[in-house]
Length: 416
Figure (cartoon, rainbow, N blue to C red):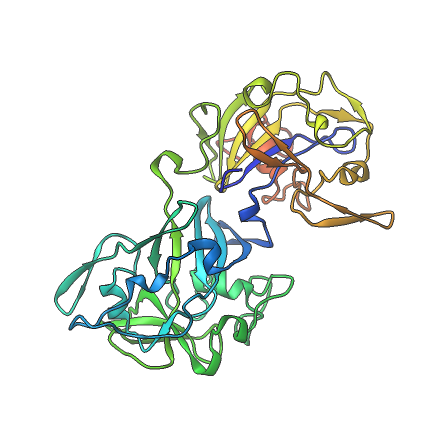
């Protein structure tokens, strides 16, 4: 299955129609996700769990790009030669970033300038001048599965509560919290990490960030110091045992794959929604995606219900926040309950389990298309109200529907 995730989502009509969809690859299992609105923008942060250093890089090591001093000797002391990696994806108004964050620091006694000399501060390919000499910020690593990553520092903002900084979105999101990091935006994992798990703020440690501090030239931002949230700044040439290097690895999207996985079929030119978070590529015949005559229920054990037509609908092809989804253009079955869909493992698509009449039912139904891609199958999310802007029903079905009394069409509304 593609790394960005491909979804199949048959449209669901309340309790009258049967709807299915898919989730993403085993490497990208969703452990927890958090969405919120901020100053008119839509933000989604997803945590895909941990991977060991060996799982990601095999014999490779992040410190093969070891920072050097101005005289050419190596700078820094190793703390953890195999830190493990936290896998995240986040999107801000549909712009997606996929990255790995070192679970624990790799080095201390290392200056920001030395990290920049190693090309590992900004991840932009643009040079940074250190002691009068330019250093390109182009350090990269390749995982054992062929994926390429830019090596850089986290973005941390200009204040403790810089809500859209990566430090707050990611580290703050999965950390157990502190006096500053409280509320729904923080610690949203079922079992959030502690200072000891991540070594953030432990013993007064500070993590280098890529941001220049606007308050003083030559200073760079740091985060931590007894509380994970706290904001600090220091001269970029400072080295102490409490200042650490925690690399961030940002996935490089190949040009042919920019914006999402290239499907087995040829996608039509896309139309992007007014809020820039949804792209619609048109309708696909069932045979363009699946084998002729194949039905989802051939591989999903759902005997309940009555077929609508022959059970081989056409598919609406969307991209939503970097994920590719297929939504059935017409319902597949009627006269079946949500419980029946859950018993077939096709309600949630996230690998968790739901209890129905005292029985635990794993939600991990899968199918494969004619091009060899694997899919997990689930229902659409529909939100908590008619006009919930986060629901897939509103964003996808409402987006391509001509509109009704609630769904006001573009250009005056966000639908149609």
